[in-house]
Image 1: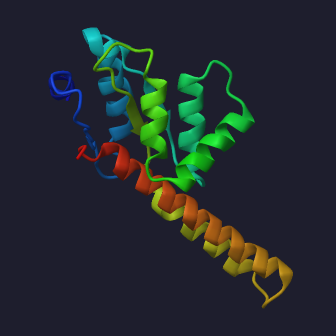
Image 2: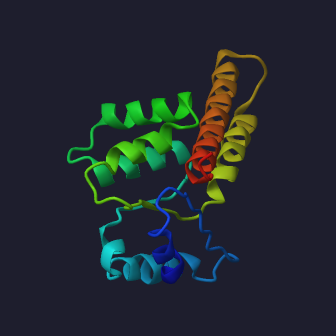
Length: 173
C-alpha cells in the first residue's frame, strides 16, 4: 500500500481512493492505523502528508468535519466545524475545497490521508435514528414530526458525506 501511495507523488493532479476492507473482527482498523498510517509517518516525503482519522458513528459528516478541523486548524472551534459542515452540505465540492485550501502551505504534491474507520456506520446511522423514532412514535404528535425531521436531517447529512467523498476522490476532469 505504501508503494502504491508513493507512486501517486509522480501524478499529483490525480486523486486516489484506497479501500482496506474485511469482515468484522479481522483487525482491519489495526492494520490501517498501526500498519499503513504508522508506515506513512516514516515514508520520506509521505511523512508530511496530514493524516485525518474519523469514525462516522451517528453523524458521519460531523465526525469528518471535526477530524478535518482538528488536523488543519490550530484552534478547533464550534463555529469552524459548523461552517465546514455547512460547506459540505451545500456543495459536493466542500471536502475537496477544504482539503485544497488546507494543503496550500504544504510542499507541492502533498496529499491528505483520510482514514474513515468503521465506514459502514455511515450507512447504518440513519436507520438507527429512524428505528429510535419508530419505537417512540404514537401518531402525528409534534414529537413525531420532530423525529421525522431529525431522520430527514440525518439522511441529508449522510448523502452530503457520501457525495463529498465521491467528489474528493474522483479523477479530475
